[in-house]
Image (cartoon, rainbow, N blue to C red; front, side, top):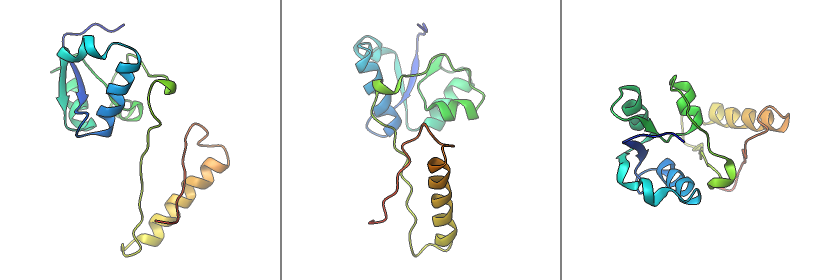
Length: 128
């Protein structure tokens, strides 16, 4: 267990990441005992900034964001402790680069189909 006097997370009302963090800690049955230590951020980038600068001792962010910012990862959450994490992508037909963006989405789906993105729930909805 990581001991710290302050823990940074995204505001559950302002950020999906904050909602996942609260859900995780609630499922671990430690949210109530930790909530007095929380200093809420508006987004993942802000939380990472506070950790990077030493303003807080720990933060709860997506693993992909922690790894891309050279943050030491102290622990990771098992996927059964929070809802599926969703990164929505929308390509608007009126967008200047809609064909290119549509191709990018199709490329990602093809990677998943070939097994390169096995641990994702990458999906596609054409009805939007």
